[in-house]
Image (cartoon, rainbow, N blue to C red; front, side, top):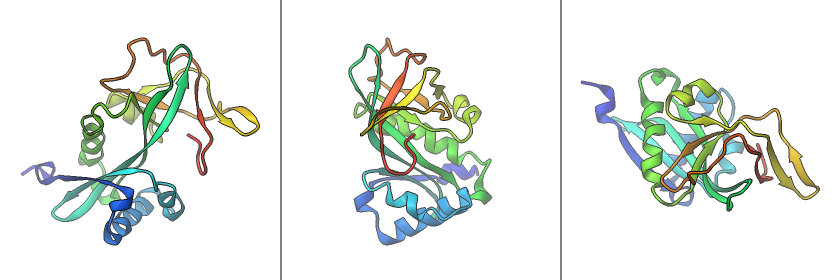
Length: 181
């Protein structure tokens, strides 16, 4: 039997996570990123979490936050900014991460104009339909616009993504604590 056939998804706003779920997410992400994920999990207070479990074990996770992205010639885009994509190290390569990322667009439905993320492995995400943003990236801070040429952002087109979205145009967001992108 394919181990993915037992995969069960749970979607929960951060505020509705039980202490056990929060601890399991923290453990999974800390193992996957090989660092203490506590400070990052604390930044996901407004996130929605997608938990993937098999046989009662949390094997993969992703979360998304609402963010505004701005580009030339379009109204601001309501983006589901995907964060904390993680799979248990002993479960990597078995399709769990792919299953989680493939489930996100349907879950987002018509709630967002676009999905976006800062990729750790751009080629992996590209195989799943994500597109690398080619234009200049920046964020708005109190002191003004700050360029972020060292960053990469990828987008996933959703049902409400404008047809005339130009991925070679500049893209801007607002400053936030932690990692801006």
